[in-house]
Length: 398
Image (cartoon, rainbow, N blue to C red; front, side, top):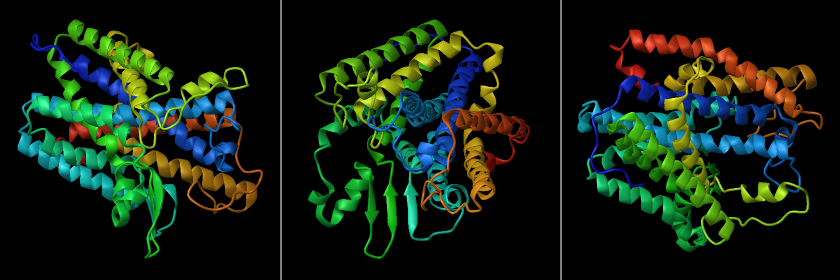
């Protein structure tokens, strides 16, 4: 995570930000594939884990695997954006206030609006999912304080959290006694059943997600440099992280909750090798995903043909896209199931699907493409609306 000590004059801001928005747009598009798969693909609807090597196929496995890159890269880029805001002269006190308010806003939406009107289509005050927006929200709140520390301290914090958290994989929640729930929220992806009847799904334990966004903030310093120097550092850092992933994963000693093993079916040994832990994100997982993200940032600075420019619309209003695509996907699935089966009371959250529910992978991809393309006009309109109405401060929360 080291960067050169003395920056050269800064490069053109427009080209720089376009590369960030292009990558963010790409991962938002890929992210939707996973959510479409949840509601439409037959194996997901029937409750089959796409990463279960005994039951999956290479195509299904890789469809799930490519979406692994979305959450860490998005969180990382959010940290980069915070650094760029500081460089543009935004007072840190003002920026901290914004990060705290936006973080709380994301947490609130995760546990209420998106759960009740997106994922589940019902208001259930005893069921809560602590997932993507939950982790992003707390990461923003923490970063609101970290930006006031010396840069070196933030870099050390991020490095220790990312590299060292797997050392605590053996710590069980039970060892915390009555505080077991805290360790589950911090480090163990699990379901928490409370005595008062609440069911809490801690999908995104906060460690090391908190370190991913602050690591992005640290890497934001690369944008103090001219493009050739910055791209060189992005490529070296990215390929270095990927190489570290290969070596660490091959050692089967540290950095992932599960070990890889030789498989009887052709190609499945490779699938076992890249079957890396997302909940919580292991060191191997972060080395591969963030390393790839760094390489892509450099690539998009050097290469951005016209045909990928539509990604900018998704990347410039990612939260707007996010809050639209979940109810749209679920709503389309609801209508489809009502037509096919006369019922739609089953979702990835609850319910038992009919044996024939779900579609092939090819149909799932077609539905994904249709939804992504269908959201493009709305995203493009919202980009223009935000540019025209900079006087509306509340737009900053979208």
